[in-house]
Length: 178
Ligand SMILES: Cc1cc2nc3c(=O)[nH]c(=O)nc-3n(C[C@H](O)[C@H](O)[C@H](O)COP(=O)(O)O)c2cc1C
Image 1: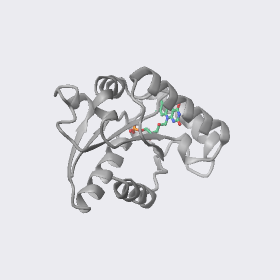
Image 2: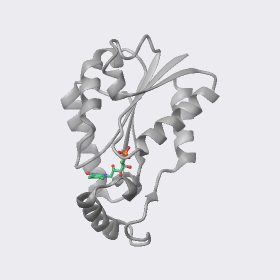
Image 3: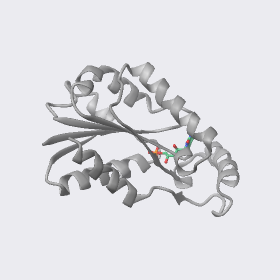
């Protein structure tokens, strides 16, 4: 089966996640193409005859990357015609705060409205603090968030929350339903 993964990232964690998904799908014997949303926007149709597709992006101030939104809007009909999965990467997904979870549901709802694409399945995956990628202002803001959300980590140090084994299991489960 030919499967296309299109992702957008700001600090690199969603790229890592998309690569892990790619490896897992390839190990299961499928042909898999991995494209950044920016590159996918250059080719039309972006899905290139794929039998199934995964889109992945990360949440920043409640929104996904504009390239991913544009791509999903352009390809909504093609995506709806095949099995698909939307992977939403965030820090809210690292915890089980009901308010944070509601916030994530709102992000996905806004994405649906903006793009006109109704993902067949949505999965929330925990991302990371990447202080090595932040500018001065973002570092300041993220240090505060880190102190509120995870006082156990060293302030201003990178911290990864992605559960790679759970991600593998999620991919296996999605593949089994194709
Ligand atoms: C400026 C900024 C804003 C963010 N806003 C949110 C947010 O609104 N909700 C959330 O759950 N995570 C938020 N995050 C956390 C990111 O979603 C998380 O760091 C993710 O791993 C980033 O993925 P990426 O490296 O692929 O861009 C934010 C991160 C940054 C740097």
